[in-house]
Amino acid sequence: SLFVVDRRGDNLDLQSFRTIDGRRAAEVALRGVRGALLGREGEGVVALEACRDRAIGALCAEAVGAMAELNSATLEYSKTRKQFGTTIGSFQVLQHRMVDMFIAHQEALSLMQHLTLSLGTAEPVSRLASGAKSKVGYAGKFIADQAVQLHGGMGMTDELNVGHYFKRISSINIQFGDPAFHVLRYAQLDAAA
Image 1: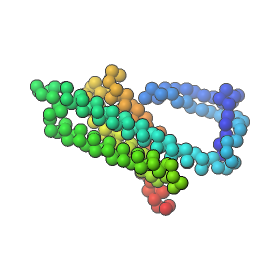
Image 2: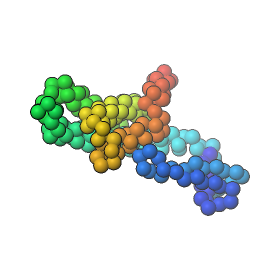
Image 3: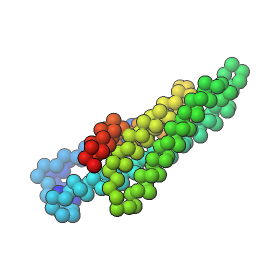
Image 4: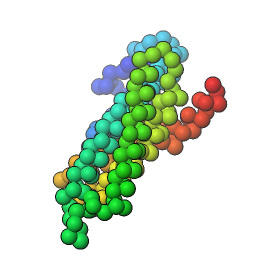
């Protein structure tokens, strides 16, 4: 069951901290805390499952947007950064890497859109949510890693958004289960279907 508790209530300990992407989180300890029942008794897991799938949809959308920004920043940087007297974007091997980044983004975008559109239907979406979360997670890590590497040491500095997007994608990847967890969840839900 789910309960609403007063944040300032007795026996509730909240230890706030900053995450790697600059956001806030907290460790919560409850000792004999009383709260008001939220929803029906015994149905907390069902409510959390539905919320998790919607939250995964939102996180996938955020990650896909971050990937688009990383691709755009990397492409622009490759047009201006010179090495050996020419722009790095003229090197074929780097062009191939940027094409791989573009393809990874497009695949993640397609799955995210499919999930988002499916959230408005009566069909169960847990399997699709896990499929999207794993694909978006792996694509996000790939794109973020490539963007940092192609930007060189500047890629992780606070002066460039590349480092901020890298950190945000890293945080998104572990929220509600990492990509490997969702591959397993996808397989389990597939076997149960």
